[in-house]
Amino acid sequence: MEIVWAMQLSEMKIMSSSFKQGADPADAMPPKAKVSQTAYTVVDSEGIWCPPTPMTDLFRAWRKAKLGDVIELRANEPEVESDVRSWARKSGNKVLEVSRQEGYTRAVVQITKRGKESAELSASKASLNDPDETKVTPKAKLQLVTVGGFTLGLRTLEPGWRWSTSMRQVAKTNTCEIRHLGYVISGRMGFLMDDGTKLEVGPGEAFDVHPGHDTWTIGEAPAVFLDLVGAVEREMSAEK
Image 1 (cartoon, rainbow, N blue to C red):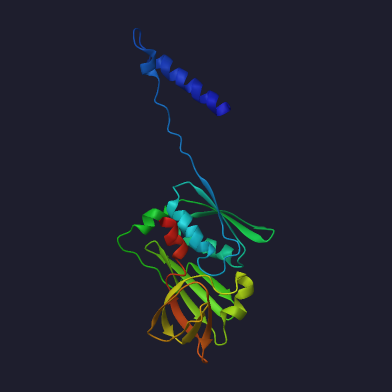
Image 2: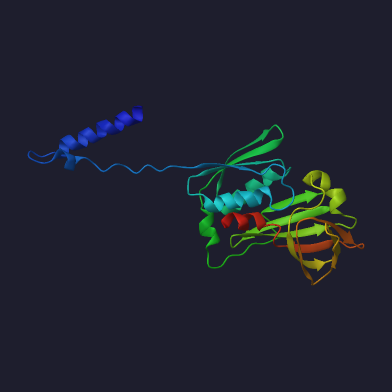
């Protein structure tokens, strides 16, 4: 209320000082100030352990946000605070608050650099040696980077890792419900689809595995591969 009245008194002073006899009083009124409105968006990524991840969801919201907007991310992954702070540092945005709630972490960031502008650069790069997000689960590690508006994942699966024994209780589904388009760098993996189809892949081979599958490592060496669709599928579908 005080701000409103101050604006009205200011307008009256300007009008009285600039008003000339015979002139239209409306011409002396100053133009109305433009009021900038900021949006507050809540991104709920609780329970997401396999890509797309909370940081993928945060990135998608960032691309749609305007300068000054605020995004609240809710996630129950253990490393989400460090991931958000790392992303904010590298993207040029501001962390306003990080707090632990019952069962999840609440991270609030203010947009000081627009994601859309970064995505539309004519050339850009990112390093998996300094990932935007690192997720560690039993016998597995996933490193994520975002470049050119998309997120890429580098997975390392230790010998003996199997989705049905390592991830089923976390994902709360019988089989993996994420599509994976990948390229194997080293090691070998096997897949068993819900329809009975079996697939084995190794170094130098690309693969496309649809939702509804179990996965495991083969042999004594870790399986290392780039995961292309799994990390970006939700973001791509959201843009349609």
